Image 1 (spheres, rainbow, N blue to C red):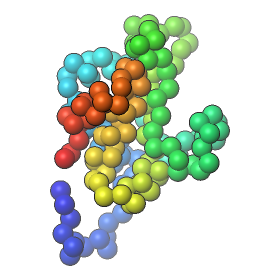
Image 2: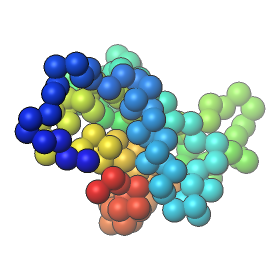
Image 3: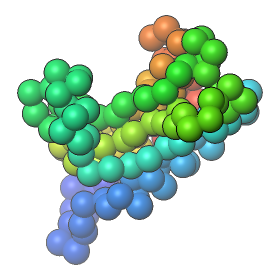
Image 4: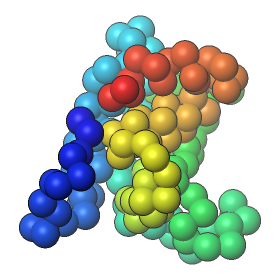
Length: 144
């Protein structure tokens, strides 16, 4: 939905964690069913920012440098819900609200499209997909 120039923004607030999570859930629901089925057990989580350990591990200069992250063992490496070892964390995708909002404010795309893009990219790591594969799947999950 495109905002009109005369839209009243005076009462609007930045989307909170729950709103970003709802956008991610909607994007995930629009993914092809076969793709979603292979994501069984992948946990999607929204946090304000990556933690300090993640920022250091990823070589980030700022807490705004990382929009999302996949952690776990991808399907290409034998990961998946059926292959979890005792005590092993599930595969997880993180989306980071404040970096997403900062990026969104600086670019000409909808927040829904951005969240879908980052979600598909991070889930793509679970599958070991190429950028071209992710672009094709993303087309099904974006809001236009």
